[in-house]
Length: 313
Image (cartoon, rainbow, N blue to C red; front, top):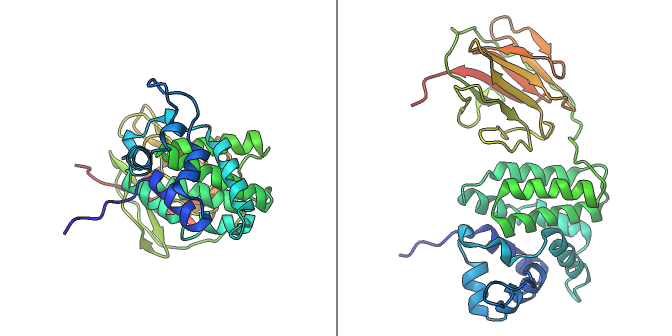
């Protein structure tokens, strides 16, 4: 039996807009492909008149084989698509319906495609959740921003590039900096014991007293690591809850080999729970605080990351 080939981000874009929005592959090609000539003298939009070329080189092409020159500006493409979705006779979608498609279960096909392509699907989903719940945007603007993110991910196959683009788009076109939702702080009183100092430190997320996922090992060099819903650096940690800011926390190792942590001015704050005494200290923005094995970082009241020591092979 032949294995079923996983969809690429671009394939998901074409498939979802066809199934949920009634836009055919040829119609979508006219909306997202560039009219600028390629070296062969023909534009991608012209070449897409050939269904075989469109299928092989765009819709079903491997993510790494897609040329950025095939596509027009993602924001412009998304605006045209949104106009088509809202005006299509017999199957028009409201802004709320567009949001339900892109932020709901149908839109999770993009998460799976990005993960299959070894992209940070959690970063993409965090951005979706921020845009869906952005208090400063009306439904039409939320739908527009979500579609820009979806199209950017489909055309680029790159989660970080797509998220970076939509954040710039929201600021420039919608006049909004995407913020962090306000949450009610919840406190925990788990017990713990101090362990010996470690030469390699990691963070592991704990939910309701249970370990959730594998450890995030921090680099042994002096490189800093950020934790946040929209953190985009190599090695940054995006495995966080809804109330965590885009760039919430920074960790680094000083010249003595000790780990330090500072809050980056997050909206919902950070608490450090001492692993031995269980004393809670709320971090001040920009103030470096030592972090040791068994200490616990509580971001926005509900994302608990416990510092652990270990040997990484």
